[in-house]
Image 1: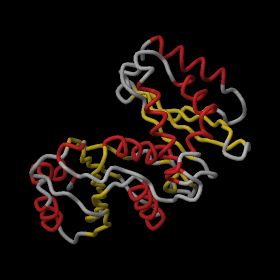
Image 2: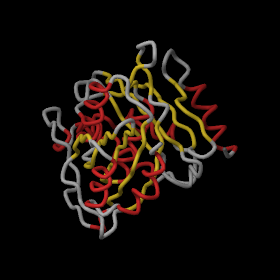
Image 3: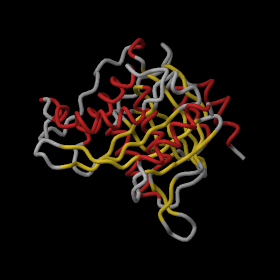
Length: 267
């Protein structure tokens, strides 16, 4: 971690020093640092709205944009997405210098103006995303492997909701003890999905207590190629044999992906 980033994290911890205002979720030399800031910003009716802002600082930050996730019990999903997009736009103006505190101050001062825009009004539950799915629109595909699911029904519903909210298509696949998630969509939305997956209490541990997903790995990610199938929806599927699972990958134009990354999971 570069010294300016260390200093920024130290400063943020000092600034957001109230109860539950600041929480480091993960630190890694390869994946960077993920942390959550709880703050408030003035909404449309002059009432402060609580915001949960999750930032992912990659190892080459601040030369690249941070990953950002926005959540609030008082905002619709569409409003949260709009706030995230505005924060990323603002972040582009601050590249090459530590920017998290600037972004938090900016949203505290500008939330009401973002919410006042027609497409993010309080009555709108419809997320506005690009509808184009051409090869050039930045469509990406990512394959994830989960070690297990103890609270399977709840876990599956959560994954389906996240995929729907973020306009991701693909498959949640079960074959014996193998659990795979194949995601297709905008790269930034896949990134936000991964933040949700790693920071939310989505499963239960051996004693039945809610816990975060610690046993997830990214097997593969790439920009969608011409030979890759476009998934029209996100579906949950169970396969009775390895051949059946292999056919799913082959139909999607992912035969090489299956042989390189999935076969090795079979014990």
